[in-house]
Amino acid sequence: MGTIVSFHAHPDDESIATAGTLAKAAKAGHRVVVVFATRGELGEPVPGVLADGEQLSVRRSQECLDSAKVLGAARVEWLGYTDSGMMGEPSNEAGYCFWQASVEHAAKRLAVILDEEEPDVLTTYDDNGAYGHPDHIQVHRVGKRAAELSAVPVVAQQTINRDWMLRGMQGLRDSGETPEGWDMPENVPPPTFGKPEAEITHRVEAVDFTEQKRASMRCHASQMGPDHFMLAMPDPIFALGFGTEFYIVSDPPSMAPELFTDLFLPLR
Image (cartoon, rainbow, N blue to C red; front, side):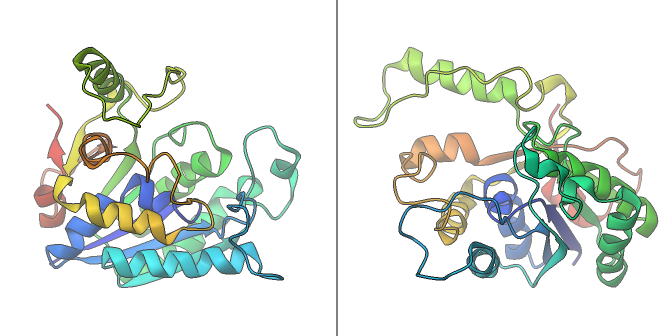
């Protein structure tokens, strides 16, 4: 059996981006490790969810552990940086936030974990962090360098398949069969959201793990209330939208690890 380390910017990113992959890996007997760059200090909590005096970072740390249990992860770690906030906000300038971290230094922190785990696969994000969040972009940069330092065989950049999403939305509109009480989003995602399908190399089919994925999301109750649009999706639409996870693997080795070949299917 192998090991997969999944590197994320904030608590709940693992649920949205890679939960199906991680649950599928754990079910197959592989070791799953999740690493967070920050504790999501700048997240906006659901009104009324925090107890008096409860710190959001402490709450979100526990939510990470709860999510990991749902997914079957064996280990959870944090690199110790703070949330940078959305691109362009004054919080981007804080000297201790992840966006301001030295890529080399942060990569060495991550490499300590990678050297201990000797993973077959490291998951990061694409070069735009899926939608341009500074911490997500930094995950791409730091993860790439850490993988070099630790000689990780495969780096899989999680991304959003923009074309897949647009086809799915158009198909639902054309069918006229959207479930009663569920409103189709009207806004077309901007061109900076996700990657075109031509740039994506691999997918993980995780439809059988969508219930675990949604349960992982529910663990992050400080950010996702029961009425959150992802949690409120009818089961078939959730499975369609979240049951396949997409990745860019720039240089897969000719002798790829078993974990990679078992989970990651070529897109074409």
